[in-house]
Image 1: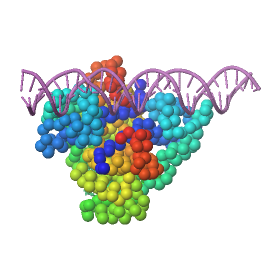
Image 2: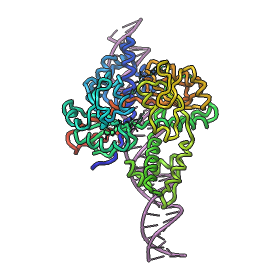
Image 3: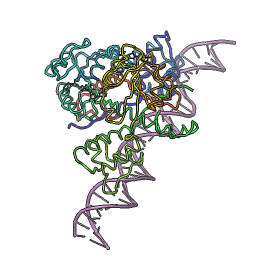
Image 4: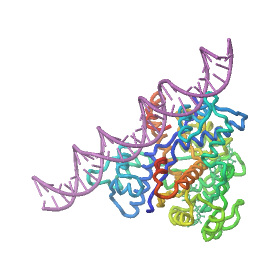
Length: 227
Length: 227
DNA sequence: GATTTGATGTGAAACAAATCACAAAACACG
DNA sequence: CGTGTTTTGTGATTTGTTTCACATCAAATC
Ligand SMILES: NC(=O)c1ccc[n+]([C@@H]2O[C@H](COP(=O)([O-])OP(=O)(O)OC[C@H]3O[C@@H](n4cnc5c(N)ncnc54)[C@H](O)[C@@H]3O)[C@@H](O)[C@H]2O)c1
Ligand SMILES: NC(=O)c1ccc[n+]([C@@H]2O[C@H](COP(=O)([O-])OP(=O)(O)OC[C@H]3O[C@@H](n4cnc5c(N)ncnc54)[C@H](O)[C@@H]3O)[C@@H](O)[C@H]2O)c1
C-alpha cells in the first residue's frame, strides 16, 4: 500500500512554466502578441517544441496570428489552476523553513503559506508574519483552510513521520526538502527537492566539460547530456 | 555566443545519486553486499533500471555475487568526483543564502562553501562561521580556492550580472535559485532550481488526481505522469 | 567435477519524447 | 476575389529511455 513513489515532474510541464514566466515578463513590457518562436527564443527551446508542448496541454493559438498574451495566460491559469488561491502548510521552521516562509514569490503566484509548524516550542511564535504552530494544531488548520499541499522542511529523521501525519489529515501533495524517499500511498504526489544532488550534478558535468579539451569537442559532451 | 542554456539533469544521473544515498545508509546499518533488486526496492525503481543505469556509467559488479557496497561506493566516488573536495562560493546572503550557508549536508558531501558574497555592507560580517565578503573580493577568493562552481541566491534582477561576473572569473557551473533563465556561454553548466514551479507542479498533479474519481482510475493519471 | 541456481550485463523490443515536415488556416495585398 | 505569405497544429520520423529477455558467469549443491 505505502510505497516509494518518486514523482518526476515532466519536462514538458516544466517548460510550460518557463513559457508562462516569459509571457508575464513580456506582458509587463507591453507586448500583447507572441509567436511560438518568440517564446522559443526567450526560453532557449525550439519553436516546434513550444507548439508541441501547447498541443500536449491543449493550448491553442490563432493560425498565422500567433498567440494573444492575455488569452494565453488566461488559458494557462485555468489549465494549471494558477488563478485560484492555494493554501499551503510548511512543516519545520529551521533554516530552510524560515527562508521559505519569507519567500514573497509564493504569494505572488497565489500560493499562501497559511501556517507553519514546528515541534520546538521556542519557534512557536509569530515570525515574519506567518504563525508558527505546534504540531497538535495541524489537523485544525488543514481542515480550516482546506489545505491540500504541504512543504516538508524537517530533518531527514522526522520526514517520514511528518509525511504520515500530513497524509492522515488529508494532504495530497508534498514538496519534500529532506533527502529521503518517503513511503506514501500511490495517490499522494511527492516532489523531492535535493539540493546536494543538484550541486553534485553540476560538479559532475563541470568535470566532464574540463576533460573535453577545446571547444571543438564540446558536442561530445552535449551528446551525453540533456540541455 | 551567450545563450540561454537550461541544462536538465538526466534522470539516470539523479537515480545514481539515489542509489548512492541508499548505499551509504545500508553501509551504516552494517550491510556489505547488495543486489540490483536491493537498491531497486530502496529507491522505488526496477532492478533492470538499476543495472541499466550502472551500465550507462560503466559501473560493474560481480556476476551472481551482486555488488560489494564499499567497492560500489568507491567506484561512484571516482566517477562522480564525490571523494575530492569541492570549493563553492555562494552569492547573495539573504533568506535563501543564509539557509544554504548553514546547511551541513554540503560539507558532509565534500562540498565546502568557502565564502559567501553580498553587496549589502550590513551583511558583510562573519555569520554562521562562513565569511561574507563584498563582491570586490570575488576574484581573489575564486582564484585562491580554485572555485569552479557557484550558487546564485540574489534577486532575479541581479542574477544575470552576477552570473556574468562569476563566469568572467572562471566559474564553470552554477546552481541558480533566481527564477530567471541566465544567458551564458555554451561551456558553462547552469542548473536552475525554481521552487515556485516545483510547488505549482505538485498542485497541478494534485488537482488532476482529485478529478480522477476513485482509485480504480488512478492508472489513467499515471499514464500521463512520469513517476 | 558436473549440475543447478541466481545474479549480472547488455542487445532487442517497446515505449516515450523531440524534431521534422507539411497541410490548413488566416491575413495581406493587389 | 485570388494569390502569396506566414504561422499554427499535428501526423510522421527520428532519437532517447525503459523494459524485456536471455546469454553469461560465478557460486552452491550434489
Ligand atoms: N538549510 C538548507 O539550506 C537546506 C537545503 C536543502 C535541504 N535541506 C533539508 O531541509 C530540512 C530542514 O533543514 P534545515 O537546515 O532547515 O534544518 P533545521 O534543523 O534548521 O530545521 C529543522 C526544523 O524542523 C523542526 N522539527 C524537527 N522535527 C520535527 C517534527 N517531527 N515535526 C515538526 N518540526 C520538526 C525542528 O525543530 C527545526 O526547527 C532537512 O531535511 C535538510 O536536509 C535544508
Ligand atoms: N527565500 C526563498 O525561500 C527562496 C526560494 C526560492 C528562490 N529564491 C530566490 O533566491 C533569490 C534570493 O532570495 P532571498 O529570499 O534570499 O532574497 P533576499 O532579498 O532575502 O536576498 C538577496 C540577497 O542578495 C543580495 N544582493 C542583491 N544584489 C546583489 C548583487 N548584485 N551581488 C551580490 N549580492 C546581491 C542582497 O543584498 C540580499 O542580501 C531570489 O532570486 C529568490 O527568487 C528564494
